[in-house]
Each structure stands twice: as C-alpha cells, then as structure tokens.
Image 1 (cartoon, rainbow, N blue to C red):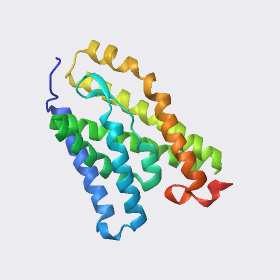
Image 2: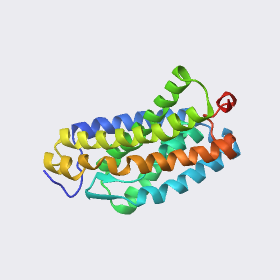
Image 3: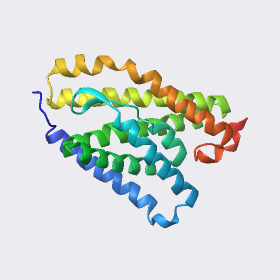
Image 4: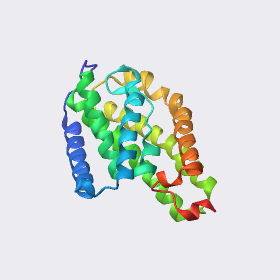
Length: 217
C-alpha cells in the first residue's frame, strides 16, 4: 500500500525501541556534556551544521525511500560513534519537524539511515585495526572511501528491505523506484567522505579521533 505518510507498525515500533536504547547509551557515554573538550565541541557543531544541507538535498518518489549524501563516515572518524549518533538523530528531528515527516519515518531513518551507517563505519575501522597493516593510505582508502561506500549501500538496502517487509509500499515501488538506484550515490558518497578524510589526515590529523600516530607509517 502506497501511503502519503509512513505509519507506525510492529516493526517500526521495534525500531523506536532500538533508537531509544541507542540514544540512551550515547547520552550515558557523553554525560556530563561540559566534560567534552572545547575543540571536540567545535567539531561537533561544525559536523551538525555541515550535515543539514547534505540531508536537506534529497531525491525520491516516496516518503522514506529517498536518497541523499550521508557524511556519517567522516563524522564517525572525527568524533566517534556516540556523538555522531546524537548529532544525526538531532538533525533528523529538526529536518523532520520542518518538512512534516511522520514520527514513524523519522524513527526508521534514525535506525537504518543513521545508526546503521555509523555501525558499518565502526565495524570497518575495527576490522582495519585488527586485520590490516596500520598505514596512512590503507587508513584513508579502507576507513574513508570503502567504509563510506559500504555505509551508503547498507543504508539503501536496509531501508528498501524494511519497507518491503513492512508492507508500507508495493514491492514494485520499492524495487523499481528505489532499490535499483543504489549505484547512483555509492561512488559520490565514497568520494565525498574519502576526500574529506584524506585532507584531514594530511593537514589536520588531530581532527580525526580515530587516527593514530602509527597510521602515519
């Protein structure tokens, strides 16, 4: 069924519980907020402002099945997963209220469009630390370019499959109007994040909390 607004179902209710749990964990890790260093606070503010226009410029034929740049890979590498998640959810709420998105749509996007890409980035970073040589170019290409492309692919497939299983849209609408379009933003997303990581790793490595001295080898 093609709805003008996404409605709450059993699956989106479970998604809401997951989002509440993740946000609570992030708040616990960052509280009290005044203990966050001032330079990290400035990076958080810059990321929050930079993500708004990236997420505002989106394209899609159906609510919830929309494509836009993420920028979450470079954010995660800069400030960590918990702060990135808080900023992503806060931006989603602001944009959702302004654009009139339904609470269910915001919830699903928070879990699969924000938390999932951040989790993929953290997984790639962990795999790099554990299994690959610690090298400048490997860090850039694996944690920057590859992680961003994988995060975008994971978000795209997860959202499409969620709405397909949940029955919010007809299968043809999900597959033909959304799932088949996955290659369009894969390379641009990888390029955007990869170039940003490259510039910071080269000129401002202190802005990347995930970057270590042995990555310079």
